[in-house]
Image (cartoon, rainbow, N blue to C red; front, side, top):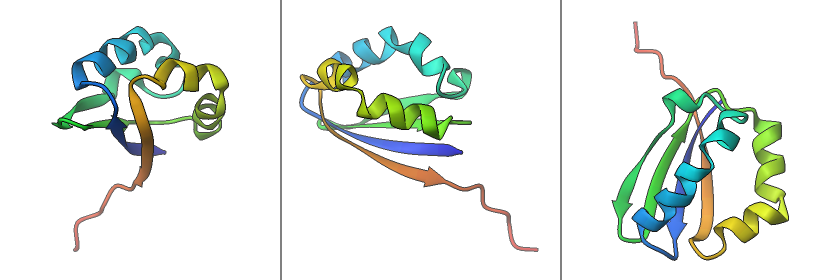
Length: 90
């Protein structure tokens, strides 16, 4: 499954990006890291798109107290959305 995550920030996008980059190896166990996209939407929002996500693994990670400690100073909340490929009308 592919997901689009809205990340509401406490910190700057740049500060968030530093911790996101440090966790790239962990992310590679959860999704196809080579296709991951992210960018600043506005001063309090970052957008992340993850492809071929292991939903069980990402669910476990997002419930992990260590993940909450890691993101506590940077993130207010993660708002995930499922992405479905649309087939053009015939």
